[in-house]
Image (cartoon, rainbow, N blue to C red; front, side, top):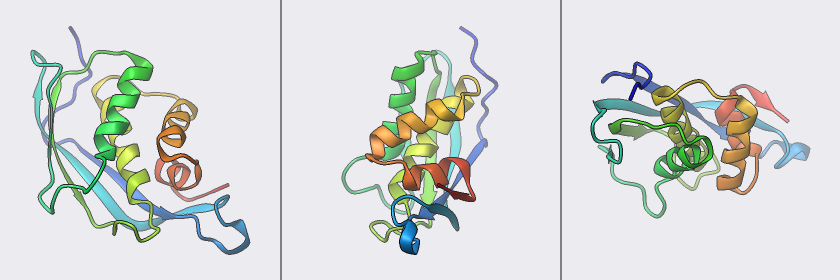
Length: 148
């Protein structure tokens, strides 16, 4: 089975975001300069069910949105992926309105994309919005810049 050339050391960086922008509340969002970084540690083509995540700064409390984003993309697109081990570090404060869950969701989807093939951003936006419950922070995390 052929996979995209994903190697240890590959890094995925996703920005935090805010959607608390005055009268554009929950409609406008903007990427901010705090980041979640995901680094591939190991790729195992012969162990496709393996998804191992390391959080040097401490594991997330509650749902692991990186895993949710990865698995949701895998379910939607159905392309096979190799087994992966990744390290995830984030300087996006949790529960501070800076899109930490959206960044994690997008990082998981981008990891799936890196292991398979590029995807249409609209398809990724649908997945992220479904997981997040709304598109505001997910749009800025996925697209960068300011979004409406």
